[in-house]
Length: 507
Image 1 (cartoon, rainbow, N blue to C red):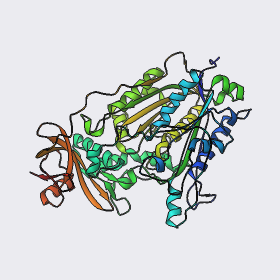
Image 2 (cartoon, helix red, strand yellow):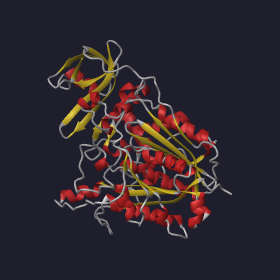
Image 3 (cartoon, rainbow, N blue to C red):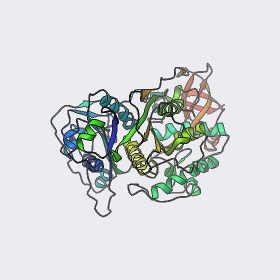
Image 4 (tube, rainbow, N blue to C red):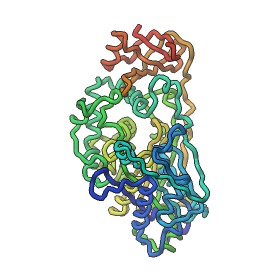
């Protein structure tokens, strides 16, 4: 018999809606989360009411409250987890609002499993939702519903989790979000491979073509359409460059209305609630890791923390990658997937597939909550093929944080350590040496916004310190080098403009 304090997943659920489609209700993200939690409770097939047994609810922080400078356009709840819990009649002892980061829902699976093991919790739920598509659609029509809510009860707000993410040197030069920062890492990988922009975009297309097929058969996918590698790689007015080398179709799609929930309980509580053991899914290993900041990384294209997280989770589970029947690698952009498959010797057309949902560009990048959808799919897959194993890799920031989970209907022995944290590397590159007069480019991107295009580069100064700047696109030779896609290794003469930015021209 499975020990009473063993943590098991007893229910999972998803909910989604699309603007203008039949049944569309323009739900708030609190409502969306409630629908997903309701679905997870129903999925448990419990004989007794589950909602009153939930003693802990964690809400994954929605995008609109993920930065201190953002205000919810339609208002929101003063206690998001309690608002979502209330929609199913739950009144938990603990209510937690997560930090930002796509790794956090997978991380919470491990945290709550440990709390259950220690007897600190009997039943915990993780729930998250995004209604970005609805917000944009209503705002475009001039509508402004009131989504504000006041809920009584305690709240454990874990903050924005921006430590290690706010690289002001890069931000000051126009790399202010995920797309340009990932593009810099992606171009560093391209340089290592010696590929031109068009050839590399095709590699991205070849990686993501199978993802589109999975998305096309997923009823919750935001873009359920099969696309060829060539279609994904070809630059058109619709598939424009957002930041070199990325075309629009190959980056995470955040305009979604999607929610997902996971319920974890002790084996004793699952029995008490009458959850059939066929519904139990066991947690065989959860690991988390934190990477150096992008400008500190010795290899701008590499992400060793994520590899270490996956390797350690496999080791804890006593399994290898070949033992995983189902895999979901976080795919906000291509490079987090490339890093994993190159390390583990997988191909882009691995017969198991590399996504369970369709991936963030095609299923949808449901904010910080995407991997909850992957976990839901993993749970459903292993229930359907008993005894097989699923791996979910969850990524946050700009390959800044990673968490991995391994799942199966096979029981896991929780008398052994099942949750672990990977030590952070101390091998950081010295950086931001100021002032400097020249720099050698390691990687770059051309970031395209409504305001125009900025060439942002990372390189080394004369002392070997990591420095950042902009390429002077008004200078013909410099513009030609950047727009041609091959400024790697070029030496720039650097001056400081009136805004304090480092401006580089080809020497």
